[in-house]
Image (cartoon, rainbow, N blue to C red; front, side, top):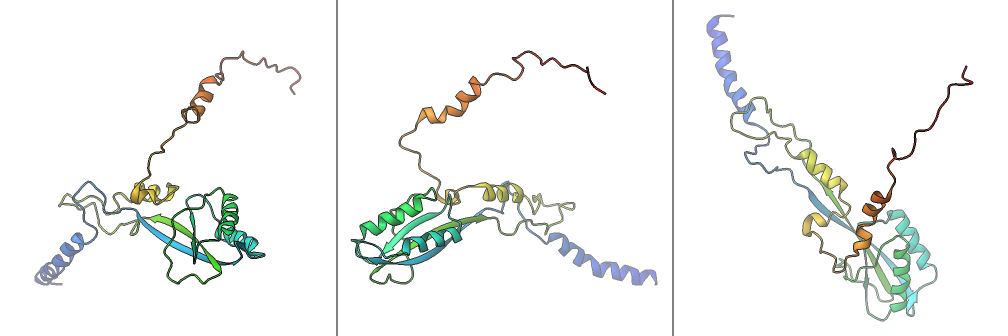
Length: 213
């Protein structure tokens, strides 16, 4: 290949190489562009009522549904009722919810379809936190001339934060401080640690090689 032809080919590929170096996620700040996103899903179950309580078998159906949902900490359970007056049914539902270590929420959820008269709608709201777009290796950080951080910057710490937080809604609005704080409960772990005898306080155990083969 002639030298002139090689020179033309290099000039033709130079713009593509320059554009390739500019591709990918750009961020010239210190705050990561990869932030946790919280999504909420609502699951509803309509239960029949009989008088002021639940109809026969509806309590067992509710418990089976919650078992299938793997109800646990972080879930919010509320009741959407067509009319007030089913106080005993509410107490029965609260008892089932309490068996999972949760309290029935007083907030009435907003559901798409109206509640049929003679029924109660139990709504489980579940939030999930994730960091979309991670991991992100879209930018080659070995050739960086614009002071951008790595395209994957912040993915590790924010993805771990989203995975470890017990109540994802705290990432959105935080949580209010408890009006009453039991200092004895807060200091229980510290008190136990302080009262524990050090492992090296006792005398060393005597050992003997007698009888060894």
